[in-house]
Length: 115
Image (cartoon, rainbow, N blue to C red):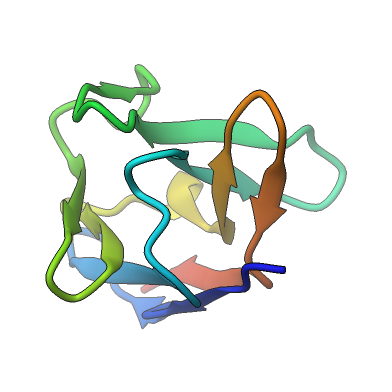
């Protein structure tokens, strides 16, 4: 079973930046779409950004222009660069890898935006 290892969460002030990383235990980018979700307690999980196996990206309206999803095949890692962070971006962020046969999840990493 492929494992997704996440890192990069933490506490940042409003207007600051963080970069989240997601590294699968083996190279799966050719066969899986990669996504970042976030969830706040008591609310539904929200799709934040997606990167298809062919390289197409998409974003939630709330993060467009501030967040960027990318991948480094050499490092076997997907990133979520988050700039101009706002208090409402505070959530647990989770990496997802999916295709029609399989859905994989990371353990989640907390991002807190607070003054």
